[in-house]
Image 1 (tube, rainbow, N blue to C red):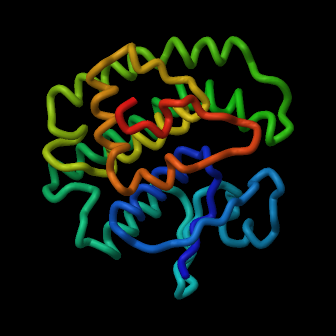
Image 2 (cartoon, one colour):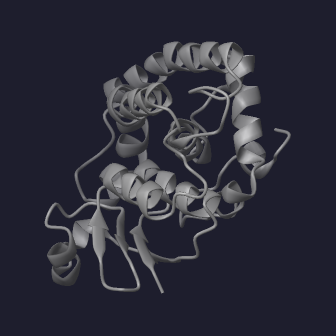
Amino acid sequence: MRILYHLPLSPFSRKVRLALAEKRIPFDLRVERVWERREEFLEMNPAGTVPVLREDNGLVVADSYAICEYLDEAYPDLPLLGRTLAERAEVRRLVAWFDGKFNAEVTRNLLYEKQMKRLMGRGTPDAAAIRAGHANLRPHLDYLGWLAESRVWLAGASLTLADLCAAAHLSALDFIGDVDWSLNEAAKDWYARVKSRPCFRPLLADRVSGVTPPPHYADLDF
């Protein structure tokens, strides 16, 4: 059986979980506490990060984007990277936006400071970073809302990896109660559409020790 090594609140792991589920590819989940630096895991991914996908034939693919590219090439029936060159370029641009810019300006300042820092034994949360994360969230939601109003899905007419990537980051932040959905109604409506898809159900059922998600987290209608 293929195995995805992950952390429940890792948006990069969540992106791959959504891609696998959207493509209806069966897999097992295995939590990997990366801060433990397990030797067997480091042999699979010397970077020591999740997610890592191990296929049932022994193939190991590390890094969330490399995994998603691999899945789209190996299982092309339900493409998530777009069909035309222009679509694929736009999907890649938006994935880079959320995994790069959004992650640096919002996710890292909120999720890392509030959750991962404690788990990794790296001290107490930085209040200035948390304030910056909340301040940065508003313009990102405005941009996401503009995309959602301008197109059927974020990158165009079809749901793509861009939608799954953005939803992965926002769902992790929503789990810890850090998304004020009243800031942008269009972004909220888009997110409601994404989390209503069958691929999202396992994420909505996630539970993490010591963290209680807000009541709306698993509510498809908010």
